[in-house]
Length: 600
Ligand code: M6R
Image (cartoon, rainbow, N blue to C red; front, top):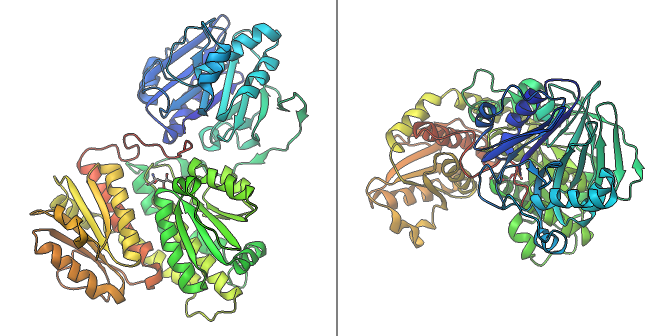
C-alpha cells in the first residue's frame, strides 16, 4: 500500500505534492512526509498521522521546483515520524520514498551496509543507504540507482532525489503500481493517476524492473542494464469530479448513492446497438470451454465472488469454486483438467490475488480479471479483463464496486449460458435496470435506516447477521461493512449454523439482523430468527416485497431473486454508515486499514 507523488517542474511543488497525497490517502494514512529540493538543500518534513497534519508542519519558506512525497501504511516499524518516508541517507545526499516490501532488506544491510547508523526501523531505508554507497563507488547516480535496484527482492515503487542533481527524479518499480504523468515543462510521478489529474491526463506506464529518469522536459525509460525503452503515453479516463466528494459529507455515502447510476452504466457498456449483450468473443470461448471456474478474491470482492458462484452455477451450469486469495497461494487445491481463473478485485492491485495470478500463469492456466481499474496489475497480467465501470471508489469501505462486480458476473453468467445454448428465462439487462430502480428507491430511505441504527445499534458492542442462500453472502458483506467502519464486532452466519455453537453468544438485546429475500428459505430463516428471539435477541428483519411479514423492520423492493444481493446490500451499507457516524468514527478512513492492499 502507501502512496507516492513526485513533481519536477517550475513552481508550486508543495501544493502539488500535498494535494496529490491527499488523493492517495486511501492507500494508507498512518504517517506522511515530503522532501523538496531548493537551491541549497533538501527540506524534509515528516509526521505521524494524516496529510492534514503534514500540511501544518510544512513551512511556507520551503519553495522548490522538485520534490517527492509519501503517505504510509506501516509494514516494517510502527507509524511514527522517524519511520515515515522520505528516508534520507546518512550523508544527507539522497532522499527516497518507497511503496512495497523489500524482502531481502536484512541480508542487504548485513552484506553491504555494515557500520551505517540507521535512523528508522523500515526496510526502505536500506535502499537509500545503498544508493548513497553505490554513488560513491560508481560516481554516477543513474548507475548507482540501477545497481541498487538490481539487488532488491520484493515489491517496490520508488522515487529518489539526489541533492547534487536538480534535474532528475529517479524512479523504479516492481509489482507495486507507479506511473509517470507528462506535462508541458513539468512531469509528475504517482501511484495513481487520480492523484495528479489536475496536472495532466497523459500518463506513461512503467513496467516491472524498469528504471525511469524523470526530468522536467523529458522522461527516459530504461531497462536495468541501462538500455532505453520507448513507449507511448495513454490518456487517463477519469473524470476529476469523480474524485471529489462534492456536497456529500463522506465518499462512502456518495458511492452508495452512485450505485443505481453504476448499474445503468454497466447496462450501457455491455449492450450492443441491437440491445443485445456485448462481450469479448475470447472471454466467451474461455468460459464455454473451461470445465470449472476458480474465483479468487479478498474481502468484499470475495463476497461478490460467492454471489457470482451462485449466478454462474444456476444459469451457466459451470461448477465454481470461490477461494480467499491469501489461502489459495499457499494451499492450492486439486485443480480440474481445464480450469479458468476469475480474479475479482476493485483495485486490481491486491497482492494476495496477484500472487495467485503469478502462480497459475506459471502453471499455464488462463485468467480473467474483473476489476474497476483496467490498467491495473491484475488486469495487465491476466489474459482477459472485464471492466466494472463503477468510477473511482475512494472510501476504504467498498460499496459500489461490490454491486458492480455482481452485475458484471450476472452478465457473464447469462452470456455463457447463451453461448452453451441454454434457454434462460432471465433478461440480464432488463433485470439489472429493475434492480437499479430498486436501489434508487433504497438510497432515498436513509432516514429510516438511520432511525433503525439509533434504535438498535446505538450502544451495542456486537451484532449478528443471519441469512440463507445468497442472503448469507450478503450477511457476510453486511457484517464486514459494519465492523470495518463502526468497530462493532459483527459476524455473518448461515441461518441454520448459529445453533451449532454461536447461539451461545446471544444475550438479552443482542442485535440479530436477518435477511429474507429468498422464497425457498423464507420459512427456514424465520424459524432461525425465532430461535434467537427465544434467547433474548433483538431481531431486525430485512425482507423482500412479496415475502414480507408485518413485524419486519424494513422491506426492500422486489427484484429477480438471483439479483437480490444487489438490493439487500444497500440497507446493509447504510446501516454500517450510520452506525459509524453515530459512533463518531472516521467513515472514509477507518483505523488500521487502507484501500488498496498491496502487501501479502
Ligand atoms: O481491491 P480489492 O477488491 O482486491 O480489495 C479487496 C479487499 O481488500 C477489499 O474488498 C476490502 O475488504 C474492503 N475494504 C472492504 O470494504
